[in-house]
Structure formats: C-alpha cells, structure tokens
Length: 300
View 1 (tube, one colour):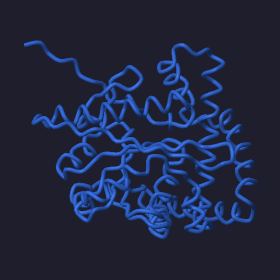
View 2 (tube, rainbow, N blue to C red):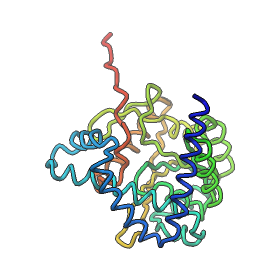
View 3 (cartoon, rainbow, N blue to C red):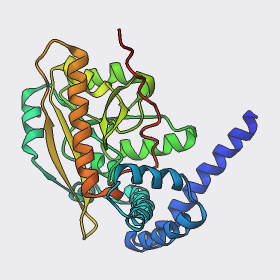
View 4 (cartoon, one colour):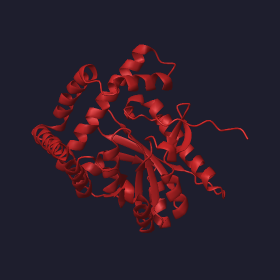
C-alpha cells in the first residue's frame, strides 16, 4: 500500500512538472485560453463537486434563477483554472512583475500597523487569486502565511519552494501557535485564509444566512499579540491584473475572549460574504463550507 502511494505521489509530481514546463512554452494569456477550454470540458465531463457547488449556490442565492446559478457554477470552474494557470507562471515572473500585478487600496492601514511595531493578522480567503495576493504583498512587506501540508510531499516541497523564492515564509498549521506569535513579535504580517470549515473546534458565525464553523485562530492570535486585523480580497480586473482593498476589523475591548473572537470572525464572514455577493464566482465554492452542523443549544 505504501509503495502504491509513493508511486502515485511521483506520478502526480512529474505530471505537474510536465504541465508547468509545457505551459511555460507559451505566453500566459494563451495558456489561460487553453485553461478556459479545459474548464468548459471539465464542467461537463469531470464534474468535481458540481452538484455540491450548484446546491450551495441555490441556498446562498435563492433569488437567482436556475440559469443564473448554472452560469455562476460554470464561472467558478473558469476562475479556478485562471488562478491555477497564474500560479504556474509565478516562477517565470520577476519580483517587480509580481509586485505590480496587484494594486492595493487603503495601504495606509498596513503602514500604520508597521509603525505600531506589532505586525498584523492579515485575513483573506480562497477568493480571486489568494496566492498572488500574498506574493504581491510580500514584495513590499515581511509576510508569513499559514498553510496546510499537501498530502504529496514532493508537490508540497515544490509549492513551498515557489512561495519562499518569491518572498514569503510559510508556517504549517501544526506549527501555527508558536510560529505566528514569533512572526508578530518581529513586526511581521501573518496571512491566514479562514474560509474553510473548522469542524467542532470552530466558532459558528453566519455566512449567507447559515451558521458556518469558522477558525478561531486569527482572532485569538490578534488578541494575544495586541495587533490589528486587516482583511483583504483581490478582484480580477479586465486587463488581467488585480485590485485588493484593505479593511481593518475592529478588535473588541471587552474581557470576554470567546465573545471577542466571535465578534471578530463574524465581521470577517460579513466582509467575505459582501465580496462574494459582488463577485459570486470568485469564491472557491468547491469547499464544503457548511459541513459541520451547529448543535442545538439545550435549554436548562
């Protein structure tokens, strides 16, 4: 069994390397066109979680017609493929190109955090091109990003090498408590994607009108470090570049830590929902966001 798994990991790794090498033979815009054609085919013949995406969209946008829902679902596939192609081209892009790929608005929030000397927790989501958002930011400011380990160790190392070569550090989730606090004490920024189901350990906050288990970590880290929390989501522009707007999430002053965490993550969820309503296909609907169900509170 272990040999089969190792063999599969090697096949996956070399398949990805070959794909990257092949695509690098062409300009990025040409590769995006190829990707969009593949997305159309995948939506019909390789419908990964297609039913889940459509059902989630129906529950989140009950006012939309069946035709509108199907269009958004298809666009979800398209957006993911474009994001994937852009990530593949990161190794070929210079620091200056990556820096200019994203236009940041409200940058003064980041500058203020840097002056205060405690860094900041940067909250984002699997929205737009989240990897590009981090890499572009890292061309300007010291950044660490919390990431999950890939099952395939070869792919995991390749992705980590690309990230580190483009200017930011990675903190694996199992090392997050210590790694995050160290980074904040160095007056660095720590980016966290908090839009996935957090299981039984999360705090339930509303997302599209339904309780969604959400990671507590981002709020806990900021409260412990006494640093600000800044949210940002990047929007793809007509010319293929991105715009990202920073928004500070107020940190409550109360003594009830659990309540403070809930207030912070509720605000984050509201911002993500607002952006997703504006650009529904930009969020990664493949996620089973509402997988964990909230248990009813027993009356005493």
